Image (tube, rainbow, N blue to C red; front, side, top):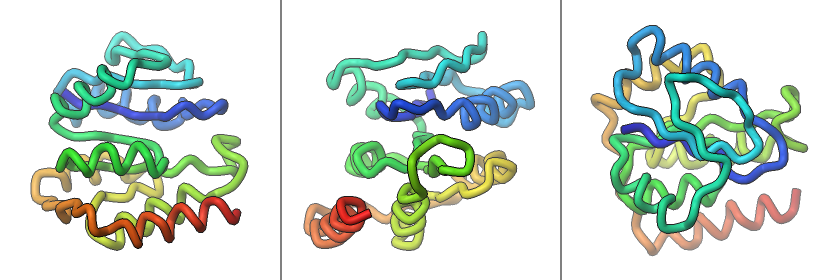
Length: 159
């Protein structure tokens, strides 16, 4: 099962869901896909979508997933890597009206640079990123990384 996390933003991220739906149709994704969609309204018979889910269900979906595809939110990324999941993170971009600014781009770049996740900066590369999961070995999350997390949080707070 693949868990897709879009957070609780007040803007949609239908762009990502369309690419995931296409990956299913093209047999790149063969597993069941569960989406925590927030404000995104994209519908497909290929994916099971929930606007919001309880914290317990959220944790359960992360635990049961083979891997995670998420937006570039710090909380979603951290919740996933803390459970040692392979993660593809796609930043919401302001040019598509998915966020007010591009801070998620910097967040994804930092986690990707440190080896925790696979960053996907162009959705035309999503299929290749999914294929990379077979050989990707993510850096294991360690609680002593609080300094890095604080740096990211301070950066976001000061945007």
